[in-house]
Image 1 (cartoon, rainbow, N blue to C red):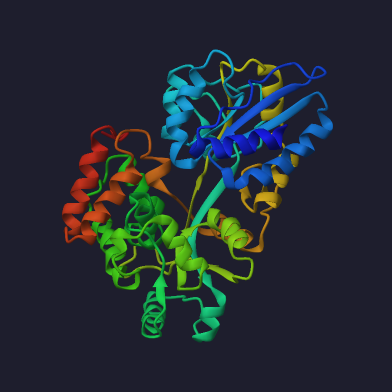
Image 2: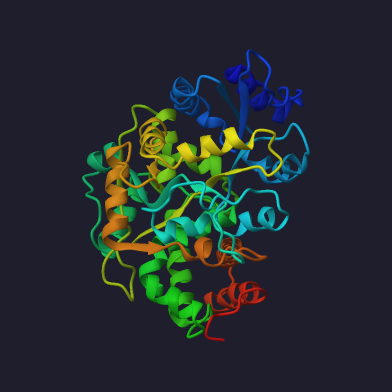
Length: 421
């Protein structure tokens, strides 16, 4: 049943097929729980994970219902409003996007229901209400940002993972002369450019020190170090794909997985899908070296929590849904998730499911930085990530870094007030 429902859900986004029947207590007393997510590509992995849960909960069947990621935030509000037949457990975007569902009363508070006593506060922040401080989801993944590279291309071109910015740009020049696109990225999606900025610009603007200065009102996004960090990204345009402003995100991914680009600035979330798409692709990982004029003299590995699983307040099976979500906070689920889907689990006591992820996670533990545009400045409209990405798009078209910084500040200051202001 679960596999059939997953197939119908995956096809339904494009073929308008009817959804599976609502969760019921029929069928020999079994409860059918529906878990709705934005990850069709993870269907097989979650089926394996939920098989393990069902073995110890024989009266429960978990149906994985994926929605096309670009449609999910449109579909979810309507699904949560249903008085009957809606999903029981839902995958939730972290930080700001979570808040509207909380204010609408569509999620069940989990305080006292789920054991998160050993979890870090900065992890739980991603699933908490901004106003009431209550927990509404169980975080499932930590994502880190860095540079993936094609080991074969590096070996063929006699290039080592760079330790300095000079080494990095020299490698880019060598690749370019060899007719290889140095870096695959997308200029069409603002959020991709914002990730590029965090990867290449965090050392230049000052990492967590700058983050705290903005949060307390000591600095803002017109600060010269911040605008210089924006310039750091656009100075790399010559090493991006031709006409990068028109390159779509999936096309950038294909450039890398097909071997046409040597590097890919992105997140640890790409490792699993890239490996699945191109099993023979030998991927390496390194942190961007400190940029020219950097305020931090060592590489930074930025990170953020990717999302959480919460309970629909209108679920017809809250008791069973609560048991499932409680299990998602256990090391059993965390390790299954990490190993099966090749991700960094947020559950304490688990280990990443891939050597590259282990490397990335160790970097975050040793010299981590907060991806501030998602973690701190993702609670209003416009989202900090989107405003920064749009400013970078304008810079690719010729706008100055100073004007781009003003654009970022104008957008974020429309809703954000510093704690010292």
